[in-house]
Amino acid sequence: MTPPPEKDRRRRAASIEQLLAAKEIVICCGSGGVGKTTAAAAAAAMAAANLGGKVLVLTVDPARRLANALGLEGFGNIEKPVPVDAFKAAGVEPRGELWAAMLDTKQSWDDLVLRHAPDEATAYKILENPLYQNVSGRFVQSHDYIAMERLFDLHSGGRYDLIIVDTPPTRNAIDFLRAPDRMADFFSSRLLRWLTVPARSRVMNFATRPFYQVADRILGSQFLEDIAEFFLLFHTMYAGFVERANAVTRLLHDRRTTFVVVTTLEAAPLREAEFFVDALREDKLHIGARVLNKVLPRYLLDGASARVAERLCSDGPAIAAAMPAELGERVAVARVLQEIGESFLNFAVVAKREAEQRAELASAPDVVATAPYFETDVYDLAGLLRLGQTIWT
Ligand SMILES: Nc1ncnc2c1ncn2[C@@H]1O[C@H](COP(=O)(O)OP(=O)(O)O)[C@@H](O)[C@H]1O
Ligand SMILES: [Mg+2]
Image 1 (spheres, rainbow, N blue to C red):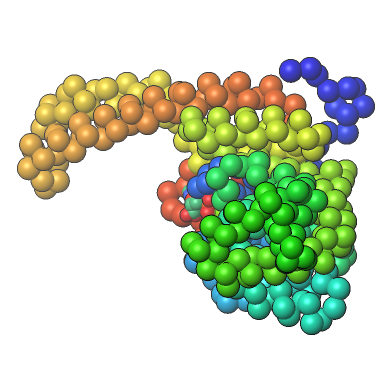
Image 2: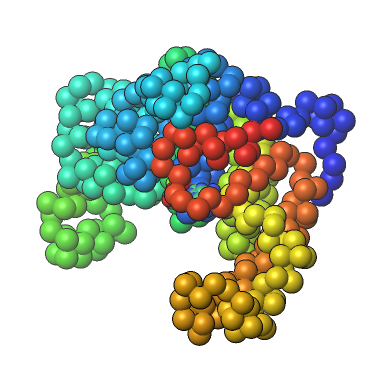
């Protein structure tokens, strides 16, 4: 790894707080289940509380309780303010405002079609096409693109000082990064042109006739016509779409935009996070921070505690004998003590491995922030702020 040039190093944020103060768009990414949604909401809550201004968190798949806490049930694409009272209940007087929105893929696609179709009649033809309804509602890939598209829309609206984006659980963490490019490629692809040929002119050539004859028999001519119509209609949005996809790509590269890679210290997510960091670097995107989430507490590394655990394992019965009798049967007490000791030692092994991985990551050129594994899920503003506090400075 080559060290960054001197001037870059000076400008680099030293904490999540500084990073968020300096940027307008923060994209939280990483593999599934590591805490992307939670981290995005926690960072946004902290920014609203401490930095001030209008902060929006755009979530993709919040757990129901978290969505409720943010006031997001059934509101689709519309942004909603998180009530000041929710902060006050958590003992915080916010300096700014926290807004939240959920990504509604279907609605976002419909908006996009309405914006780019050459006229209203065409727009409605597209919206009513059965194939379109399938693609916009279910395509995983369409999720990727639409999250970035929605971000672009919100950012150009200029209503927010800071937008923090959660990313969809893609099969591959980098999929959504390439989504705008793929969308542009798709529209200029030969496949698309080829598919639209039979609808443009019913004169089929030698090469395509057998395909259509077979396809006709298998799929039914209605289906083929739907496909052809869909692609033909979609093609009318070509120019607008490509231009827009390129603008979205430019926004991702803008110096006001940064990426935060969220991961746990487990082997698989960590590997994926490293892979993701490489991909960001390759695409020359700004890596602002890594958040190591659900990290085990440091006391697990404490030698004295480990020795106690070892003694619980080896001398369980003796220690149980010295315990007050009302605790329960000696045998049961001994069993529990031994179990606790073993459990502690097992966690200590994992904590040790985590500590090694953290030491390795400490040399990473970006901010590395660590959040502990809390004993409960993080589902309300107080929980978000508690987690946010641990990664803030
Ligand atoms: N530091 C943490 N300690 C305890 N639970 C956490 C922590 N971070 C996240 N969680 C919980 O883990 C689950 C998955 O988090 P989520 O943010 O939805 O992950 P992702 O968006 O990456 O799939 C949620 O139930 C969340 O409350
Ligand atoms: Mg999520």
